[in-house]
Length: 364
Image 1 (tube, rainbow, N blue to C red):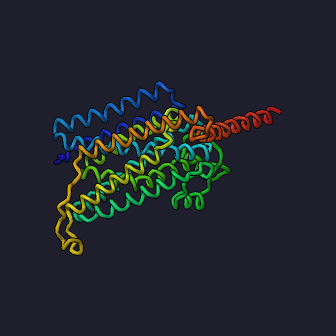
Image 2: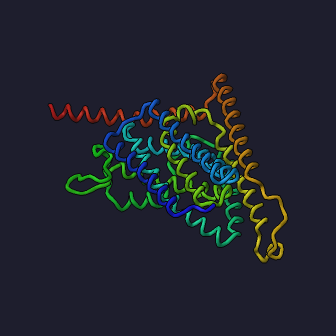
Image 3: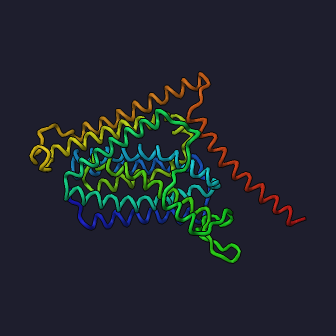
Protein backbone atom coordinates (compact mmCIF):
# COMPACT_ATOMS: atom_id res chain seq x y z
CA UNK A 1 0.00 0.00 0.00
CA UNK A 2 1.55 3.27 -1.15
CA UNK A 3 0.27 6.31 0.72
CA UNK A 4 1.31 9.63 -0.86
CA UNK A 5 2.83 12.23 1.49
CA UNK A 6 -0.13 14.57 0.94
CA UNK A 7 -2.51 11.90 2.26
CA UNK A 8 -0.43 11.57 5.43
CA UNK A 9 -0.34 15.34 5.86
CA UNK A 10 -4.08 15.73 5.23
CA UNK A 11 -4.91 12.87 7.62
CA UNK A 12 -2.77 14.23 10.44
CA UNK A 13 -4.20 17.73 9.88
CA UNK A 14 -7.80 16.46 10.04
CA UNK A 15 -7.09 14.44 13.20
CA UNK A 16 -5.49 17.49 14.81
CA UNK A 17 -8.45 19.70 13.91
CA UNK A 18 -11.01 17.20 15.27
CA UNK A 19 -9.24 16.73 18.59
CA UNK A 20 -8.36 20.43 18.95
CA UNK A 21 -11.99 21.43 18.34
CA UNK A 22 -13.17 18.83 20.85
CA UNK A 23 -10.70 20.04 23.48
CA UNK A 24 -11.62 23.69 23.01
CA UNK A 25 -15.34 22.94 23.29
CA UNK A 26 -14.91 20.79 26.39
CA UNK A 27 -12.47 23.28 27.94
CA UNK A 28 -14.95 26.12 27.62
CA UNK A 29 -18.00 24.16 28.69
CA UNK A 30 -17.13 21.24 30.97
CA UNK A 31 -20.22 19.08 31.53
CA UNK A 32 -21.47 15.55 31.92
CA UNK A 33 -22.70 14.49 28.46
CA UNK A 34 -26.25 13.24 28.06
CA UNK A 35 -26.97 9.74 26.76
CA UNK A 36 -28.23 11.25 23.51
CA UNK A 37 -25.07 13.34 23.06
CA UNK A 38 -22.84 10.33 23.68
CA UNK A 39 -24.89 8.03 21.43
CA UNK A 40 -24.87 10.48 18.51
CA UNK A 41 -21.11 11.10 18.76
CA UNK A 42 -20.35 7.38 19.04
CA UNK A 43 -22.56 6.63 16.03
CA UNK A 44 -20.72 9.28 14.00
CA UNK A 45 -17.28 7.92 14.93
CA UNK A 46 -18.25 4.30 14.21
CA UNK A 47 -19.84 5.39 10.94
CA UNK A 48 -16.66 7.23 9.92
CA UNK A 49 -14.59 4.13 10.65
CA UNK A 50 -16.89 1.98 8.52
CA UNK A 51 -16.82 4.53 5.69
CA UNK A 52 -13.02 4.63 5.87
CA UNK A 53 -12.89 0.84 5.63
CA UNK A 54 -15.24 0.88 2.64
CA UNK A 55 -13.03 3.54 1.04
CA UNK A 56 -10.01 1.26 1.48
CA UNK A 57 -12.05 -1.54 -0.10
CA UNK A 58 -12.81 0.56 -3.19
CA UNK A 59 -9.32 2.01 -3.59
CA UNK A 60 -7.05 -0.82 -2.42
CA UNK A 61 -9.18 -3.97 -2.51
CA UNK A 62 -10.55 -6.52 -0.06
CA UNK A 63 -7.23 -7.64 1.46
CA UNK A 64 -6.29 -4.25 2.94
CA UNK A 65 -9.91 -3.43 3.81
CA UNK A 66 -10.10 -6.69 5.76
CA UNK A 67 -6.84 -5.82 7.53
CA UNK A 68 -8.23 -2.45 8.58
CA UNK A 69 -11.51 -3.84 9.91
CA UNK A 70 -9.69 -6.64 11.77
CA UNK A 71 -7.28 -4.13 13.32
CA UNK A 72 -10.02 -1.67 14.21
CA UNK A 73 -12.19 -4.33 15.88
CA UNK A 74 -9.20 -5.62 17.83
CA UNK A 75 -8.17 -2.14 19.02
CA UNK A 76 -11.76 -1.31 19.97
CA UNK A 77 -12.24 -4.49 21.96
CA UNK A 78 -8.94 -3.98 23.81
CA UNK A 79 -9.94 -0.37 24.56
CA UNK A 80 -13.25 -1.43 26.09
CA UNK A 81 -11.47 -3.48 28.76
CA UNK A 82 -9.22 -0.50 29.53
CA UNK A 83 -12.26 1.60 30.41
CA UNK A 84 -12.78 -0.23 33.68
CA UNK A 85 -9.36 1.01 34.86
CA UNK A 86 -10.26 4.53 33.71
CA UNK A 87 -13.40 4.40 35.85
CA UNK A 88 -11.34 3.39 38.89
CA UNK A 89 -8.88 6.24 38.24
CA UNK A 90 -11.75 8.75 38.11
CA UNK A 91 -13.22 7.41 41.34
CA UNK A 92 -9.92 7.29 43.23
CA UNK A 93 -9.10 10.91 42.44
CA UNK A 94 -12.71 12.00 42.99
CA UNK A 95 -13.06 13.69 39.60
CA UNK A 96 -16.37 15.63 39.46
CA UNK A 97 -18.63 14.24 36.72
CA UNK A 98 -18.61 17.48 34.75
CA UNK A 99 -14.80 17.38 34.42
CA UNK A 100 -14.44 13.69 33.52
CA UNK A 101 -15.08 14.18 29.82
CA UNK A 102 -12.31 16.79 29.55
CA UNK A 103 -9.85 14.61 31.48
CA UNK A 104 -10.57 11.68 29.18
CA UNK A 105 -10.16 13.80 26.07
CA UNK A 106 -6.73 15.14 27.05
CA UNK A 107 -5.62 11.68 28.15
CA UNK A 108 -6.72 10.23 24.80
CA UNK A 109 -4.80 12.88 22.85
CA UNK A 110 -1.67 12.06 24.87
CA UNK A 111 -2.20 8.35 24.23
CA UNK A 112 -2.64 8.92 20.50
CA UNK A 113 0.63 10.86 20.25
CA UNK A 114 2.51 8.17 22.19
CA UNK A 115 0.93 5.38 20.13
CA UNK A 116 1.96 7.16 16.93
CA UNK A 117 5.57 7.00 18.15
CA UNK A 118 5.17 3.29 18.92
CA UNK A 119 3.73 2.68 15.45
CA UNK A 120 6.67 4.40 13.75
CA UNK A 121 9.16 2.37 15.82
CA UNK A 122 7.29 -0.87 15.21
CA UNK A 123 6.98 -0.27 11.46
CA UNK A 124 10.69 0.55 11.17
CA UNK A 125 11.64 -2.57 13.16
CA UNK A 126 9.42 -4.85 11.05
CA UNK A 127 10.76 -3.44 7.79
CA UNK A 128 14.36 -4.02 8.88
CA UNK A 129 14.11 -7.23 10.94
CA UNK A 130 11.44 -9.78 10.05
CA UNK A 131 12.37 -11.85 13.13
CA UNK A 132 10.68 -9.16 15.26
CA UNK A 133 7.45 -11.09 14.57
CA UNK A 134 8.81 -13.88 16.80
CA UNK A 135 9.16 -11.41 19.68
CA UNK A 136 5.74 -9.83 19.09
CA UNK A 137 4.08 -13.25 18.89
CA UNK A 138 5.73 -14.59 22.04
CA UNK A 139 4.88 -11.41 23.93
CA UNK A 140 1.20 -11.59 22.93
CA UNK A 141 0.94 -15.26 23.93
CA UNK A 142 2.57 -14.45 27.29
CA UNK A 143 0.17 -11.53 27.76
CA UNK A 144 -2.80 -13.75 26.87
CA UNK A 145 -1.85 -16.37 29.46
CA UNK A 146 -1.31 -13.69 32.09
CA UNK A 147 -4.64 -12.01 31.28
CA UNK A 148 -6.50 -15.34 31.43
CA UNK A 149 -4.99 -16.17 34.82
CA UNK A 150 -5.90 -12.74 36.18
CA UNK A 151 -9.50 -13.10 35.04
CA UNK A 152 -9.90 -16.66 36.29
CA UNK A 153 -8.62 -15.71 39.76
CA UNK A 154 -9.82 -12.10 39.71
CA UNK A 155 -10.64 -10.39 42.99
CA UNK A 156 -12.40 -7.09 42.32
CA UNK A 157 -11.75 -5.88 45.86
CA UNK A 158 -8.04 -5.73 45.04
CA UNK A 159 -8.62 -3.58 41.94
CA UNK A 160 -6.62 -0.39 42.12
CA UNK A 161 -5.03 2.24 39.95
CA UNK A 162 -1.94 0.85 38.21
CA UNK A 163 1.14 2.62 39.53
CA UNK A 164 3.76 3.78 37.06
CA UNK A 165 7.09 5.56 37.27
CA UNK A 166 5.88 8.77 35.61
CA UNK A 167 2.98 9.25 38.02
CA UNK A 168 5.15 8.47 41.04
CA UNK A 169 7.81 10.94 39.89
CA UNK A 170 5.31 13.77 39.40
CA UNK A 171 3.61 13.19 42.76
CA UNK A 172 6.97 13.13 44.59
CA UNK A 173 8.69 16.09 42.94
CA UNK A 174 5.88 18.57 42.26
CA UNK A 175 3.51 20.25 44.73
CA UNK A 176 -0.10 19.22 44.12
CA UNK A 177 -3.28 20.76 45.49
CA UNK A 178 -6.22 18.56 46.47
CA UNK A 179 -8.81 21.21 45.57
CA UNK A 180 -10.84 21.05 42.37
CA UNK A 181 -11.43 24.82 42.43
CA UNK A 182 -9.13 25.16 39.41
CA UNK A 183 -11.55 23.18 37.23
CA UNK A 184 -9.84 22.04 34.04
CA UNK A 185 -6.66 24.05 34.69
CA UNK A 186 -3.43 22.09 35.09
CA UNK A 187 -1.67 24.62 37.37
CA UNK A 188 -2.97 27.17 39.83
CA UNK A 189 -1.48 29.54 42.40
CA UNK A 190 -2.04 28.42 45.99
CA UNK A 191 -0.52 30.23 48.99
CA UNK A 192 1.66 32.22 46.61
CA UNK A 193 3.11 29.13 44.90
CA UNK A 194 2.31 27.47 41.58
CA UNK A 195 1.00 23.96 42.16
CA UNK A 196 -0.36 21.18 39.98
CA UNK A 197 -4.09 20.55 40.11
CA UNK A 198 -5.78 17.16 40.54
CA UNK A 199 -6.77 17.46 36.87
CA UNK A 200 -3.08 17.36 35.88
CA UNK A 201 -2.50 14.20 37.94
CA UNK A 202 -5.59 12.49 36.52
CA UNK A 203 -4.56 13.30 32.94
CA UNK A 204 -1.06 11.90 33.55
CA UNK A 205 -2.59 8.77 35.08
CA UNK A 206 -4.94 8.26 32.13
CA UNK A 207 -2.29 8.94 29.48
CA UNK A 208 0.43 6.75 30.98
CA UNK A 209 -2.02 3.94 31.77
CA UNK A 210 -3.15 3.86 28.15
CA UNK A 211 0.49 3.82 27.11
CA UNK A 212 0.95 0.61 29.13
CA UNK A 213 -2.05 -0.90 27.35
CA UNK A 214 -0.49 0.07 24.01
CA UNK A 215 2.30 -2.41 24.72
CA UNK A 216 -0.30 -5.11 24.00
CA UNK A 217 -2.40 -3.44 21.34
CA UNK A 218 0.36 -2.23 18.99
CA UNK A 219 1.99 -5.68 18.55
CA UNK A 220 -1.53 -7.15 18.20
CA UNK A 221 -2.52 -4.92 15.30
CA UNK A 222 0.85 -5.44 13.58
CA UNK A 223 -0.12 -9.09 13.60
CA UNK A 224 -3.11 -8.20 11.42
CA UNK A 225 -1.61 -5.58 9.12
CA UNK A 226 1.90 -4.28 8.50
CA UNK A 227 0.65 -1.10 6.80
CA UNK A 228 1.58 1.83 9.11
CA UNK A 229 -1.23 4.00 7.71
CA UNK A 230 -3.89 1.38 8.50
CA UNK A 231 -2.37 0.77 11.94
CA UNK A 232 -2.57 4.49 12.70
CA UNK A 233 -6.15 4.88 11.45
CA UNK A 234 -7.35 1.80 13.36
CA UNK A 235 -5.94 3.31 16.55
CA UNK A 236 -7.37 6.75 15.77
CA UNK A 237 -10.91 5.46 15.23
CA UNK A 238 -10.72 3.25 18.33
CA UNK A 239 -9.55 6.14 20.53
CA UNK A 240 -12.02 8.62 19.03
CA UNK A 241 -14.91 6.57 20.37
CA UNK A 242 -13.28 5.72 23.69
CA UNK A 243 -14.62 8.75 25.54
CA UNK A 244 -18.19 8.01 24.47
CA UNK A 245 -17.84 4.36 25.49
CA UNK A 246 -16.73 5.49 28.95
CA UNK A 247 -20.06 7.21 29.52
CA UNK A 248 -21.93 4.13 28.30
CA UNK A 249 -20.22 1.90 30.86
CA UNK A 250 -23.55 1.12 32.48
CA UNK A 251 -24.69 -0.62 29.30
CA UNK A 252 -21.38 -2.24 28.40
CA UNK A 253 -19.04 -3.39 31.14
CA UNK A 254 -21.86 -4.40 33.48
CA UNK A 255 -22.69 -7.19 31.07
CA UNK A 256 -19.33 -8.08 29.52
CA UNK A 257 -18.17 -10.22 32.44
CA UNK A 258 -16.12 -12.54 30.20
CA UNK A 259 -14.46 -9.75 28.22
CA UNK A 260 -11.05 -10.36 29.79
CA UNK A 261 -11.10 -14.06 28.90
CA UNK A 262 -12.32 -13.27 25.38
CA UNK A 263 -9.46 -10.81 24.90
CA UNK A 264 -7.00 -13.41 26.20
CA UNK A 265 -8.17 -15.82 23.48
CA UNK A 266 -7.99 -13.03 20.90
CA UNK A 267 -4.42 -12.06 21.85
CA UNK A 268 -3.35 -15.70 21.87
CA UNK A 269 -4.78 -16.20 18.38
CA UNK A 270 -2.95 -13.13 17.04
CA UNK A 271 0.23 -14.24 18.83
CA UNK A 272 0.07 -17.64 17.11
CA UNK A 273 -0.60 -15.87 13.80
CA UNK A 274 2.53 -13.76 14.31
CA UNK A 275 4.65 -16.82 15.08
CA UNK A 276 3.35 -18.58 11.96
CA UNK A 277 4.06 -15.48 9.88
CA UNK A 278 7.57 -15.30 11.35
CA UNK A 279 8.16 -18.95 10.37
CA UNK A 280 6.86 -18.19 6.89
CA UNK A 281 9.32 -15.29 6.55
CA UNK A 282 12.12 -16.88 8.59
CA UNK A 283 15.70 -15.78 7.86
CA UNK A 284 17.37 -16.52 11.21
CA UNK A 285 20.40 -18.75 10.52
CA UNK A 286 19.94 -20.87 13.69
CA UNK A 287 16.32 -21.75 12.78
CA UNK A 288 15.89 -24.16 9.84
CA UNK A 289 19.24 -23.00 8.46
CA UNK A 290 17.85 -19.55 7.74
CA UNK A 291 15.29 -20.95 5.32
CA UNK A 292 11.54 -20.10 5.51
CA UNK A 293 9.13 -22.79 6.70
CA UNK A 294 6.50 -23.88 4.22
CA UNK A 295 3.58 -23.36 6.59
CA UNK A 296 0.08 -21.99 6.04
CA UNK A 297 0.11 -18.23 6.61
CA UNK A 298 -3.28 -17.40 8.12
CA UNK A 299 -5.14 -15.16 5.60
CA UNK A 300 -6.85 -11.95 6.70
CA UNK A 301 -10.35 -13.23 5.95
CA UNK A 302 -9.78 -16.06 8.42
CA UNK A 303 -8.40 -13.61 11.02
CA UNK A 304 -11.35 -11.25 10.60
CA UNK A 305 -13.81 -14.13 10.94
CA UNK A 306 -12.01 -15.44 14.03
CA UNK A 307 -12.08 -11.99 15.66
CA UNK A 308 -15.82 -11.62 15.02
CA UNK A 309 -16.53 -15.13 16.35
CA UNK A 310 -14.37 -14.65 19.48
CA UNK A 311 -15.98 -11.31 20.33
CA UNK A 312 -19.46 -12.62 19.50
CA UNK A 313 -19.11 -15.72 21.68
CA UNK A 314 -17.67 -13.55 24.48
CA UNK A 315 -20.68 -11.21 24.31
CA UNK A 316 -23.25 -14.04 24.23
CA UNK A 317 -21.67 -15.98 27.11
CA UNK A 318 -21.35 -12.74 29.11
CA UNK A 319 -25.05 -11.94 28.63
CA UNK A 320 -26.06 -15.47 29.64
CA UNK A 321 -23.84 -15.31 32.74
CA UNK A 322 -25.21 -11.89 33.71
CA UNK A 323 -28.80 -13.08 33.29
CA UNK A 324 -28.08 -16.17 35.41
CA UNK A 325 -26.43 -14.05 38.15
CA UNK A 326 -29.36 -11.63 38.19
CA UNK A 327 -31.82 -14.47 38.61
CA UNK A 328 -29.75 -16.09 41.35
CA UNK A 329 -28.88 -12.85 43.11
CA UNK A 330 -25.22 -13.30 42.25
CA UNK A 331 -22.65 -10.55 42.60
CA UNK A 332 -20.64 -9.69 39.51
CA UNK A 333 -18.81 -6.84 37.87
CA UNK A 334 -22.04 -4.81 37.78
CA UNK A 335 -22.11 -4.52 41.56
CA UNK A 336 -18.44 -3.54 41.63
CA UNK A 337 -19.01 -0.85 39.00
CA UNK A 338 -21.92 0.49 41.04
CA UNK A 339 -19.65 0.69 44.09
CA UNK A 340 -16.96 2.53 42.13
CA UNK A 341 -19.60 4.92 40.78
CA UNK A 342 -20.91 5.54 44.29
CA UNK A 343 -17.35 6.17 45.47
CA UNK A 344 -16.91 8.90 42.87
CA UNK A 345 -20.35 10.40 43.51
CA UNK A 346 -19.77 10.29 47.25
CA UNK A 347 -16.48 12.14 46.91
CA UNK A 348 -18.18 14.80 44.80
CA UNK A 349 -21.02 15.15 47.30
CA UNK A 350 -18.52 15.55 50.15
CA UNK A 351 -16.81 18.32 48.18
CA UNK A 352 -20.16 20.05 47.70
CA UNK A 353 -20.99 19.67 51.39
CA UNK A 354 -17.56 21.04 52.37
CA UNK A 355 -18.18 23.98 50.08
CA UNK A 356 -21.57 24.67 51.69
CA UNK A 357 -19.99 24.43 55.17
CA UNK A 358 -17.30 26.93 54.19
CA UNK A 359 -19.93 29.29 52.81
CA UNK A 360 -21.84 28.97 56.06
CA UNK A 361 -18.74 29.75 58.12
CA UNK A 362 -18.01 32.82 55.99
CA UNK A 363 -21.54 34.11 56.41
CA UNK A 364 -21.35 33.41 60.15
